[in-house]
Image (tube, rainbow, N blue to C red; front, side, top):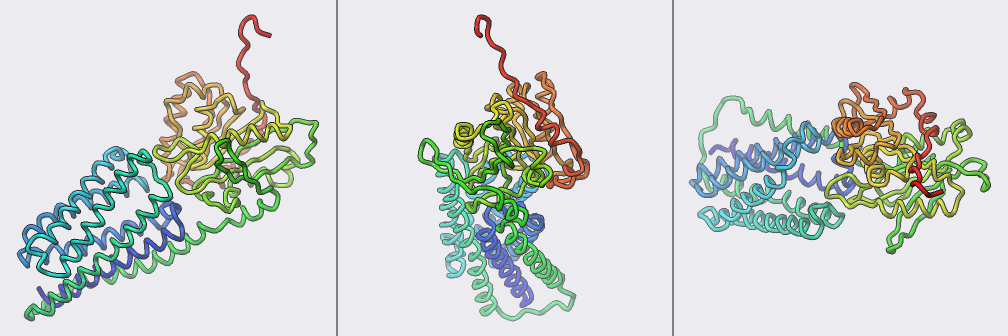
Length: 474
């Protein structure tokens, strides 16, 4: 091996470690919102390309040093890691969800092969090198901890993500980012003891690739950092809306609490009945500030001065923390019960028309909107799910609920099939939902919604269809 080979190996290992640590920092700043940022898919792809280059250099070194067991197990682990990265990329960003059911199996297989590869660095011939032994020991401990977390999640939380699990996973990711530094020590030591080899006079392609990767990392890193910081701050729109809404906290029957904002109708008269709109926020509304959830299309439109006069309505906007949802998303804690308890409490406190209670939400809130009318169809007079996915199995429950759903054709966060499938199922069950699909539009719908006339007029024209009385009952 030449000096150039060692330098290239050290460069890609160092860059891989830097990108891993930077990813951890971004995760602390932006939390779960990080994966929804526009630049993250490119960053994820670049990080895996850099890591692959680094791994190839390490495997080549194992081969040249005749560490056969470490080389074979390392190749298998490299293959499973690539397979896992491809599945994650396709699922999260997403290209296709066909292979999503296979991800847990691939994850376990990847951890098992990584565990084996790390173990061979400790107990095989390669373990005579102190740097490799330390890298193997760290990898072995991290793999064991990851498997333990996976088992704990499956047994205690049915595979759902929780804030505690996310913190532990972030901690493991940080230590995993330090492992390449131990391998750098191995290459530096190897170069010091090896005799000098003749250098190739041909242009070194890896130097060009490395410099290009570093440049892209710096560009994407700055861009992604900016997006992550913006994601943690309330949007200007939400700050403006907060001036009109009351900040309140509701205590549930079991002692749990729910932060929410409430807007009362302009000129509220307790002798008159008013409609109520439940606004369910998307992923950008996660938090504890009781502000960010106000940056939604329906709240923005209904708080415009002329619409406040035209549509006097109560607006309630609850906020939940990371790791929870409104419902409709597998393996995510659902906070629907406390929301319905809140609605019942508001109906008792204010003169709200029970036949004109509406629900709307975008993305995470779109999932929740479908879930709410699927599990409690008799509660709502109408629903507007935006960029959400419903469960076709609940279609029969939604037949009598007026629905106007919206989705972008090129949505990468929530595939458009999530709306298409449930709409078709409701129609097959005898319902007549309205569905608008915006061509060449992604996850963000506000401009397209603003250009669609009559949405609010349609919403407030709907009234709940009461179940017919049984014979003999008055």
